[in-house]
Length: 619
Image (cartoon, rainbow, N blue to C red; front, side, top):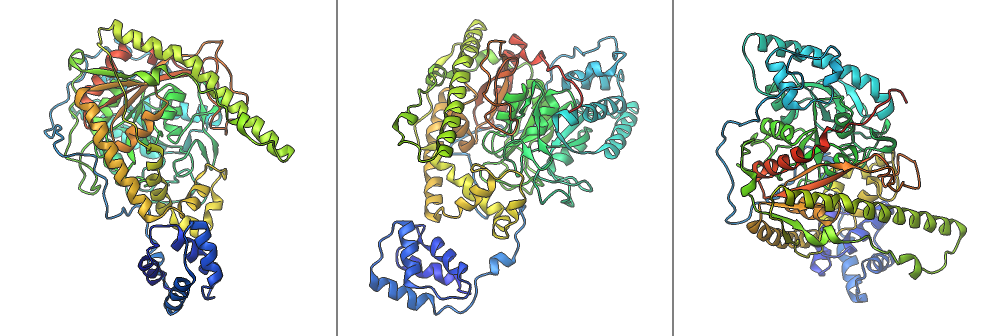
């Protein structure tokens, strides 16, 4: 085998290291086994890379490259596990940025429990109660942790066949934890508002003795011999883990090796992803709360689809130790709950440095339910709220279809575009009503715009990092075991990512830094920015690391446009009568205390979170 290291060094000496050329040529050489590189191979690679190489340089390259007798498999032979991060660390903190570093006691809201006179006769009456309400019932011994745990385990079993949100029920572990919680509370050893409350973990969080599947074919029996830091911290808070919940394979979408996780409001739709199970189970009243993750919409999207309240914390606030890595510079862990304050109570338990995830900052979150949100400076993304659905003229510009199959594909794409446009136009009234409600609450909303940059091009970093995280999966061909194999799925993305030049990855990182500086200036003038959940802000704030709260914003009416297909595996199948809409609040880096206080005020003024889906058990 040729020595790739010296091969790349030779290409670098020719001024070609920043192009596609080296990777393409190396792949051709590998495909030929032990055959030598030829001028024809160089010509083919140069054509793909759009690099002009004079004949005399080709001969020089051949002479050098084919002298290499040793193989370059050293790094491959390391079989680097997913848990090993690169030496480079993404840091969202800019020079001069300040944030809280002193941990203070929580100030939670005044208790007004779901059953002031005690637990209801049928405990399922508490299935949709908030963490704050359930916590108070457990604290005052009106409900036992054991009873709650059995109730939620029963609902998980009852509704999983219809919603497909559970990978593994952790019944034995849960009942043991619940027994311990009840004994501690009886002895006066109360740990806090999560003590005794059943929760569900997205199945990319490692749990010792329980499989961690990452939702992916080929990993169905994977055992990781540790508990993720977030799991350890929720154990310490006294919370009871009842289930490992689904995620789309390797954190993409809602299609996993067991099927498609469904939206409780419309089971013909997927729950969106990749925190598919956490959102579906929480919305269906099958856990008190859940933990999801987001790299580029994986808390936001399923929270929207399922009508949950989701928090994507600032990058570097919650340690990811023991969580599957997809993008080291963009992954975040956060709660999916029924209320904003629930998110605050969970965040309080999981935040802060663990001494292992080097990306975690010394920032702290101090929840104060009585914080005066009226003093916060609020803006809204004016153009995003006013933007109408694009007319989509692409079809008129296309050449005639070459085959009937191509024509059919174009017609299907056109229907998708039209359905998305119709849904966006219909949903505008919910966004407009939200702005009106905020003004009615006395909020002085000022127009603001996000700076213009080629944000989508910066997502190259995510693509490259994810391909590196699962490099061996691609090289061994085991990516064929993943359930979904469409153009937008990971197998194809990972293969495509191998053509991203190293220089372009660095250039994307440099462009990202420019964007970080510009977005930080926006938050110099605003504590909160109100935004439609969809749109460019989602990409922007995931790249810069800013936090977001996504909350329900009403149900679509009977006149809502339907999607043309009822295929649950079609990720665009969304909307329609009786499904939830959402609104997003963006905050400063590590400004979660202010962000959540503001969002909670809106939530309590509207009450949309009190609406729940009508469920039917069975498939």
